[in-house]
Length: 110
Image 1 (cartoon, rainbow, N blue to C red):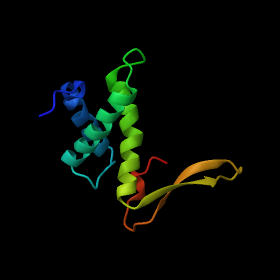
Image 2: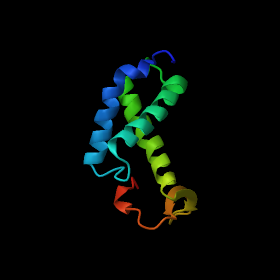
Image 3: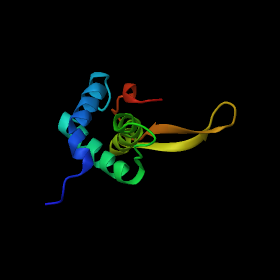
Image 4: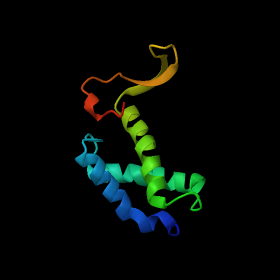
């Protein structure tokens, strides 16, 4: 069995964030344990590669990382693709396109 990871002490924070997102209507196709599992996998990798306690708190770091990284994984797992397309001013912007029917567009962060 691998040794303890510093993130293991903050698992309650991951459950808190998962509950908050689900109350706000996000990630509805995943149950709570799936969501926390995705949070943990992404958070552990991000913690090891990018977290610097001199720049801010772990809770703020996780909130920012999980919002974008888990949302990307969630949309991709349900048939979404992100493409750079020009907006009305001709500036290239990221936009999600849904390839799988039945995905609730109210779950997007756009």
